[in-house]
Each structure stands twice: as structure tokens, then as C-alpha cells.
Image (cartoon, rainbow, N blue to C red; front, side, top):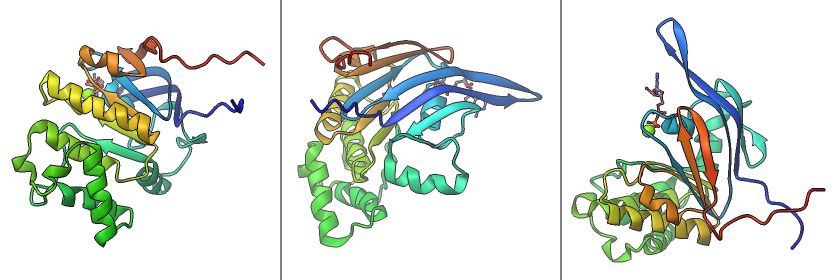
Length: 244
Ligand SMILES: Nc1ncnc2c1ncn2[C@@H]1O[C@H](COP(=O)(O)OP(=O)(O)O)[C@@H](O)[C@H]1O
Ligand SMILES: [Mg+2]
């Protein structure tokens, strides 16, 4: 080993968030600390209303915390102005939505090509790369089907392929399996896990399905706007380094 400790892709420290409620502020995140690392699937679990979407939106640089810091690749992004954020988001953060967000007039491979076009990849190179990405999610033979002709799980795998079209180190998904049955959910999350490991991305997934815990490298449990528990399921612990 080199002895160099790789920094997390995202480090969240003391993050608080309040929403305005009429003439007062309602705090929904009360000081969140967490790390998200490359090559790992992290699951964020917790009851409805516990603040999961708010936290994910902050991690996606779409919402500013009221207090605390968010570091992306070691850089404090909470200090940046609105004008700097879209380019950073486009380069470093990929999103997967519950509702798939596929374009219904385009087939599977074209939906992935749209995402590649945003990265400046077009034409034959885009087709080749899009087919590779569909192959990664097990959908190569369905490349010319439109979303209407795909099952829920297949649609979600197209949106996973689309998120992977960007070089983003951090992939965020808010209940991506919310509309899927538990077996299909497990297949989609298994795909996300394999991609985290094989592509060395940090994949961070909100889910309320406890059956998926076993697939995760890290499970973070939220309760009432705090991290109640953060565990690394057996056998996947980080190597503890001796204190300097
Ligand atoms: N834009 C908003 N304005 C005011 N309150 C909000 C807003 N978004 C979420 N909330 C409140 O914040 C709390 C956490 O919501 P959310 O982050 O969506 O939780 P979860 O995703 O875990 O269900 C809830 O009480 C919710 O009503
Ligand atoms: Mg939510």
C-alpha cells in the first residue's frame, strides 16, 4: 500500500437546512456528517419526512445548506456562487430519478446519446459509447425500443446508463426503485452496486427498502433530520489506519 488515504468524493460536515414556514424557519436537517467514497454503493434510508431528499438535493449542489459545509473532491462547494455551480454539477454529479425522465420519442440508445451530447460526444462515437453503456446495464439487445415498450426496471436501467454517460464521480439517486417491485428493485440496485465497484464511482442511493441493505457498502440511517446510524455491513469495512 502507498499509505495515501484517498479522500472521499463528497464530505458533508455539520450540514443544517431550514425552510421558511410563514414567518418562522423550520429546521429539517440538524447537523449532518457523512462521507461518500469512490467504488462504493451507499444507501440512505429513513422514514418519509426525515430529510433524505433535502440532503440529496444539497449533495447535488441544487440547494444551499443553511449552515455547514459540503466538499466535492476536497473543495468546499458551499462557498461557491450560483454562477459556478452548473458547470461543476455537469462534470461531477450524475442524477437518476424515480420517474426515469426518459424522452418518450427517442429509443433507448438515443436517450443515452442525448446525455453524451451534453458531454460533447456525438455521431458514431456517441453510438458506440451508448451501446457500451446499455451493455453495462444489460440492455444492449433492447437498444431500439422506446420507453413505452420497456418495463419499469428496463427504463430505470436506461436512466442508469444515461447517468453513466457523464464522467461524474458522484451518482445520486432519490428512490430510483420507488415504482418497482422488490425483485426488479434488487436488480437495479445490484446494477448500481456493480457499476460503483467496476467504474470506481461513488453511488449514493435513497431507498426505503430494507431488503436492499445487504447490497450496500455503507448504510446511513436518517431519523428526524439527523444521522441515527452509519454502518458498513460485515466484510466491507475500510482498513483502519493507525493514528499518526
Ligand atoms: N421546499 C420545502 N419547503 C418547506 N418544507 C419542506 C420543503 N421540502 C421539504 N420540506 C419539509 O422538510 C422535511 C423533510 O422533507 P424531505 O427532505 O422531502 O424528506 P424525505 O425525502 O425523507 O421524505 C419534511 O417535513 C418536509 O415537509
Ligand atoms: Mg424524499
